[in-house]
Amino acid sequence: MMGADLKQTLGVLVAGGIVFALAPSFIELHTLTVLTIYGLLALSQGLIWGFGGILCFGQAAFFGLGAYAYAIAAINIGESTVPFLLGIAVPFLFALVFGAMLFFGRLSDVYLGVITLVVTLIFFKFMNSTAGPQYVIGAAPLGGFNGIPAFPVLNIPGDPEAFIGSVGYYGICVAAILLTYALIRWLLASPFGRIAVAIRENETRAELMGYDIRLRKTLLFAIGGAIAGLAGTLFASWAEIVTPNMFSLTQSAEIIIWCIVGGRSTLVGPIIGAMALSYLKFLLGQQSLVDNMLILGLILMLTVLLLPRGIVPTLAQGITQAAARLRRRRIGEAQHGR
Amino acid sequence: MADSVLETHGLVMQFGGVTAVDHVDFKLARNELRCLIGPNGAGKSTFFKCLTGQLKPSGGRVVIGGTETTAWDPYAIARLGVGIKTQVPSVMDGLPVFENIWLAAYRTQGRQQARLQAEKVIDRLSLGAIADREVGRLSHGERQRVELGIVISMEPRLILLDEPAAGMTGEEVDTMAKIIGELSADAAIIVVEHDMQFIRSIARTVTVFNQGRILMEDDVDTVMSDVRVRDIYLGKKV
Image (tube, rainbow over the protein chains, first blue to last red):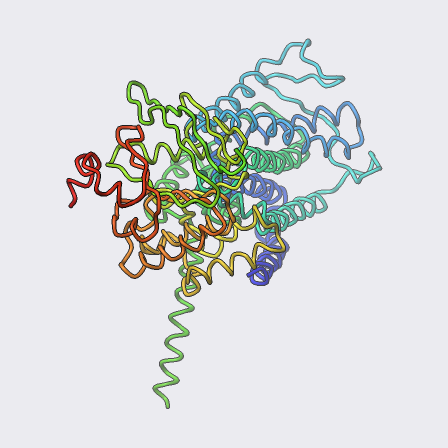
């Protein structure tokens, strides 16, 4: 069982590596980098929703928090290593405390969705209203609606002057998403991950087995927060500006749509959903004939109606079935020939 | 105190104006096998839920193995060695049979032993042929057995079985009775059942619930020949 799992993970990593290596020939590098970052963000949602059964409407909160933490720390510190780590640690800790309140309070799924969304919007409102000069953390003004521009972007660790070029930065983002994918697969194969899936399947039974589901859901939620924070940190260095829009309703909703369209029962599904839909949005943004949100809404509706499990699980099933049919036919032919 | 596995003192569970469990004093000795009968709505399943912590009692005390567990969380009570098979099988439908049982075994046995334990239990309940199947696709009787497997692999010292023979074929019922008999060598067991044949085949002492209270508690034959019991419960069936 473990062997097959490992083989599949390595297969996805190799295939992913090849796709990411070839992709710059087809898509402009700057765009491709942000698509990769969105893939990472979707991966965080895919983990906690698809495998932990936690439907968080506020994954954007951790994304934005990671970006702001990085930007603020980078202005104050300069060298990017500590800000980079803070960009992961701050959303992780926030998700840990926030998750503990949600899960130890035993909120039901609907309230969890509402509260996570509201918290994201509180961040959105708050960050929008920090334009005044009194809103400063160290040397970094929060900037309100305009956000924080002009902070030091990611540099080679230890050398603040050695900024990373666009090819190098794309490489970092690809490494981040592949490494995160591998770590999540490892986590899901470990007892912690197997129990997390058990909790998704049947909370009552998991608890009657003696597992403290509140603690386990909190931890998984915090891990998801850390990954979203990493995506936010990478986004900050890509955009070279962080704005309150990272906390917006659109951003929150898009992450969920990526997972639904791509297929949330897999890890690859959300990544593909995020990258494909974001690229489509980018292409649609270059024309003015139809509103791109209209098209994205249509895609979401069609997916939910026609492919309720999402694109990747449906494709995977189709391929497995086709392979089985082919094998049967071959056996049939062989017998016929004899 | 030391030789009782479970005691309740004046246990009360109210839902608004309805008292589902009404001042129940119950005592179960070590390795005792007890049957719980009573008409629908008598409070048997609610009583179980109070014992496992799924419901927080409105009043009274629950003592398990000398530890007061009133209003504890279910996971903490489970860790004292309490396993329950619920009325509607509570299993992980999307996971294979093996994974269901492994998850239960892992909590008590640790990583080294869990696999062996799960295999042992699957063997014991003859689930080998369906070990890789998804539980959601199995028949009701098979799901009942999977849930029993989950309970057994935890090696609990107090086992609560809510209608373990429901929806099973005659052969499966006999196997279930045999397994319960074997289990009672190492654990105290309470069985809620409606099947009188089944109760006769396993029980010594029977407790009768009616309207949230204990109506009587005696050996099988005395209970079955009691007029009140016939009136409230058996009269409708026999």
